Length: 286
Ligand code: KIV
Image 1 (cartoon, rainbow, N blue to C red):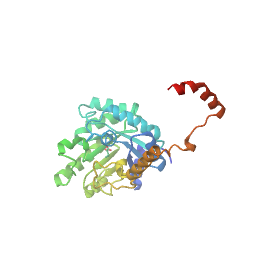
Image 2 (cartoon, helix red, strand yellow):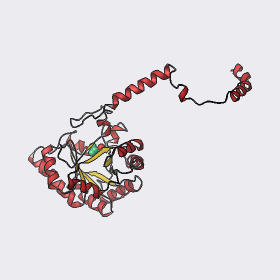
Image 3 (cartoon, protein in one colour):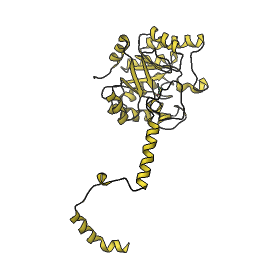
């Protein structure tokens, strides 16, 4: 398998070959996903919730994103590395957006940046693309807007709201985005957008007809129970599996079963004898 790029991902859309994406936040997980053949890894600002324990994504900083992106990039041999721009790293000005996108590429070693929003962030998308940085847009239930939405609510259900999302999808494509995540919108609307625009759509809670799918890895591995959205499928309940391993470890340490002989390093008996002799008096005194 060779390196996934903007061009190979675009080709997958054209050939009807579904694009796979998972969130990823560290080196060893990146290696596992990469070796499994994932097309793209997203350092999502969902790390604010899954890794850092915040109740939403709003407190995530540029430093958080760079730190995790660089770790993922070191483990991703073939996957295209996409890094989220955190809340307020691009909304205030176009200049901020380009500078921060540049940091995610330069310090975080990402291959593409992702930002949330449609028409409102098109000037930012245009400027970032002009700086030779590929952009993934994000429409629908955009988590950085939960306060405006009044919670994690499915978007685009009315004709007016749906038209707005379709219009945003066309605009971000015109602005130069190379890919778009469609989150928490009706499946039929996502299918229509996927047919209408030429860049790949990656769905999460947006039905089967997107060009690709993304899930938060802790969700699909049953490792995160703070929220359980309807669109998540648990592919392996590793949360329970891990808890059992942790319990077994605790039991074995307390019971003196671990570490066993095979986990232990040896020293020459003669060396030990000398040491015991040497420290005899001290041992008695203590
Ligand atoms: O932050 C994230 O993990 C995301 C995905 C849910 C698409 O944006």
